[in-house]
Structure formats: C-alpha cells, structure tokens
Length: 190
Image (cartoon, rainbow, N blue to C red; front, side):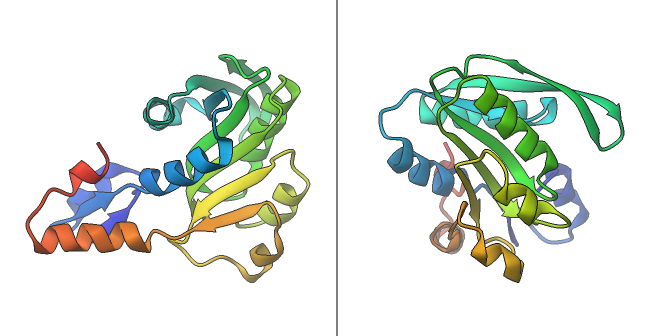
C-alpha cells in the first residue's frame, strides 16, 4: 500500500500489509524553485512539531530556517507568536503537512509578513480546509497556498485565487513503477 505524508509515521504499523509512505516534498520543491527563482528564502515551521520537516525542506531549497514559537492563552487561541530566525527581506515559505482550519497558518503568515517578508508562501501536502479555512485564507496575508491533490478540495476552495494545487500522480506513478521493478522508493526523496 502507498500513502502520502502520513501525519504520524507510526500509523504504518497498524496495517497487515506492507506500507510505503511517500513524501510530496519533491513535487512542492520543484514548483517552489520555479516560483522563487534566485531570491533569498527562509523556510518556516509554524510550530515546534514541524521543525524536522522544515529543516529538511530548507536544506533541499538551500534556504534559511525559522521557527515560530507559539504561546497559547487557552486551547485553540494563540496569544503570542515569536519568530526565531531571519525573515526580513526574504521570501517566506511556511511548511506544514496539512492545512485544516488554517488558523495557525494564517497567524504565521501575518507574523512573518509583519517581520518584513515581502512574499509569503505556504506549502502543505493535504488541504483539508475545514470550518472557516477558506474565508480565513482569502483574507490572510498569504500570497499563495501551495497544496497537493491527495484529498479532494471542497467546492468553495476552487474559487480561492491564492490556492495552487499540484498533482502527486507522477510521484505515485514512479513509486508504483519502482515497487513493481523492485527498485528503491526512498531514493525518490534523498
């Protein structure tokens, strides 16, 4: 079985069949490289839990890394956001595995824009976009939200001009081919 960007890698252990978890990173990176060109870039983790993902992404993009330290007033309410790293006069790329309600993502975009980033992109594999995500994204300071087609978008999301959807079909096709030919799948991501 093939999966794309499991939220927690441990999920693989709950299946009775072999599972390969592929990553959408190559698809997102290819698009971003074309989009940002030679400009200075900082990849941002919107929370402490995503630092490893952001670090790997930054390394492959030859970019700096920044982390957002969130302090919550109470559950689901961010009181303060501190940016650890340099974003002033740099293209900011906020990276996460999924966008659900987009609250954290939009707050992170506002914070890096306020800290001097002239362009703010966000990348996520899975665009859940539940609740108030779509109006929140429409009014956010994001220039573009780049996602993949791993799950179908809500109908309302199609009209969101900031949303750019990339296909993971070629990635999955290559993974299937390599599985069939008994070649390495992990070499797709190294």
